Image 1 (cartoon, rainbow, N blue to C red):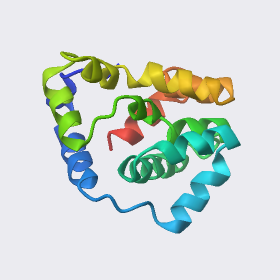
Image 2: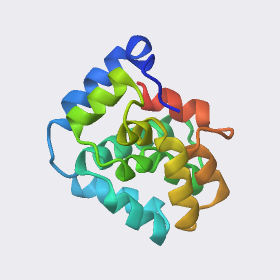
Image 3: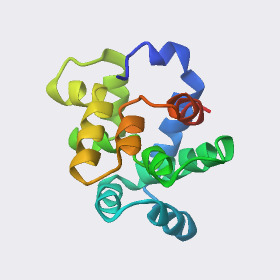
Image 4: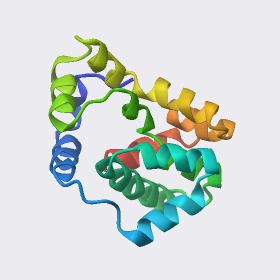
Length: 153
């Protein structure tokens, strides 16, 4: 689960995410095409529900993940692409996410944001994802430490 302490331990990551989130530009067509080839049909639907900013971020993280873990399975790559999919349930924009990161789960939507890993893993499971994909989104499994490092690079 994301915690406000993340502000102190990963400020560079958060600053880069913030500035990247200011543009609503969609992912580059070649990145989108690559991502879709890694996802099952139900996962593709989830990925398309993510904001442009989150899809760009997820493709960047997934590319880092594949570079760091060349033996990654399709299911693990899907987990990397969908690691933030639970945020779609929260309805928070950039400034709401900043506030939730600073103050924690003080409102229902902020609590949703803080719990996006569990929510995302449930969404992926309902969409027919493999167990390895669900585990990675839920922050568990053998590839999680690699994903975590790639997400905070």
